[in-house]
Image (cartoon, rainbow, N blue to C red; front, top):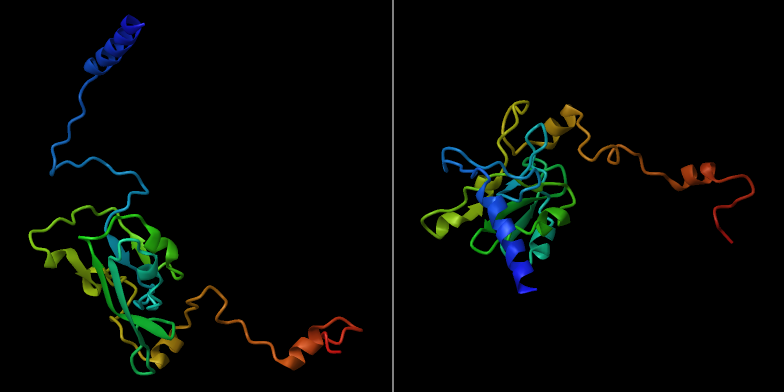
Length: 190
């Protein structure tokens, strides 16, 4: 029995010994990563430059390594950074702690946080491995004229629906609901 196992292992070695080795001249030539590779994080923007992050801190709560810090703040009429009520005034990811699990991007309700294919994160100092909001923000899109903050009037004049149709749906009043009820139905009033 030991002879059969030995012969099987030698066949495996011979198969791999006859293959041409795959060599990449790193760093000039890099091995392509899988499409779903988890690299550096990125905070995304809308096409007009507004930030998608609403400062909800769900990514920080989902992080098992406690590598994310988010400080939310309220938008004002004169200074709007995101389409919601809040935005992230401070956002940090500590890559000394991050385990690249992707739970933070799963927790994000606005798809503000994603992971890129960038893998050059190593640095000489510990301070440079704490990425701040400025380093994490996606570049300003070409369609954006200026960088936030914007005023509410500027955003309203653009006519962009940030929430996919839900923000434009008018709220139903009690009179509207009564008109929608089928005949003979008093809307549940007893």
